[in-house]
Amino acid sequence: MNFDDLPPLRDVIASHDLGAKKSFGQHFLLDLNLTAKIARLAGDMSQDQAIEVGPGPGGLTRAILAEGAASLLAVEMDARFLGALGEINTASGGRLTIKQADALDVDETTLLTEPGDKVILSNLPYNVGTQLLIKWLRAEPIWWRRAVLMFQREVADRVVAQPGDKAYGRLAVIAQSRCEARLALKIPARAFTPPPKVESAVVVLNPLPEAQQFKDVTALERITASAFGQRRKTLRRSLAQAAGQAGTSADILLDAAGLDAGARAEVIDIAGFQTLARAWRRAYEASRA
Ligand code: SAM
Image (cartoon, rainbow, N blue to C red; front, side, top):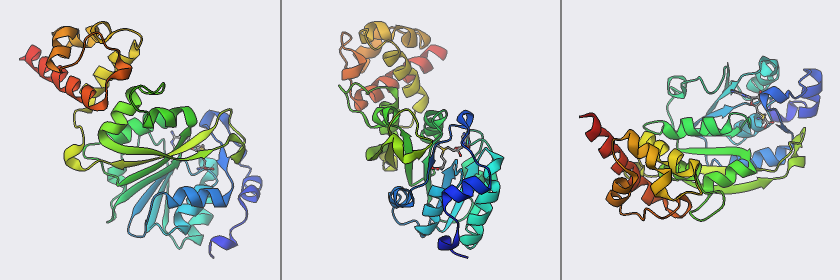
């Protein structure tokens, strides 16, 4: 069997009774030209172990395998899809492994044990997309060579935003402190079955060279949560609580980082937040010594 012998996805959905469930954030991509376009964003996968979160009926799954991924691990929470995915495995010559699990709970590094680079592809379930991205960004070391991820357009904008943009915030600072991020494709709601309420977009993330990756993600999360949690306030005010936690004041932290205490978070660039996170960490360690 090969992929051309597989039934159309609409027939798979009908014959396996795979109607979309809202609780699992299910919006299916049935256009195989589009799924192929998304899979190609991963580049040459012939030596790679790919992982897909939420394969559902398997549109993107088929594309990843057809594009030549050496192997693919698909993590799906909803057991209804296992039969349809098994058929794709057969068509792929056994390159697909299916794991029924919540992707938030899996430790990918213990599952992806074959040789080769790791690449993540997913039409992410909207309800856990941001949490999964943060999990993959926190990983130390970053174990994947590229991530090709579909989000709601608004979330995609937040990942790639630059200082001064309306969407600039925690997610941009954390993502771009670890990766180079670009918005690669915008996808209209009508491309999905059933269509979601909003547009979607695919973001491609390439980890920065190791020496350029900012390592203390915990400190960066603490600082950006404070700074953007009250984004209309000056940093002197918005950082007061985070500074207090480190036994210091916002003014001292901002002075150590060479930043204007009267500025707002939205104008501070990524390097500025990294300097602040380092200053926060030093103060925090000193306060506990
Ligand atoms: N990949 C398919 C496609 O593009 O047509 C389906 C994408 S749909 C947006 C999200 C998929 O993720 C669904 O199949 C859903 O069951 C699955 N899912 C939702 N939450 C999940 C979780 N926490 N872990 C693993 N899979 C999950």
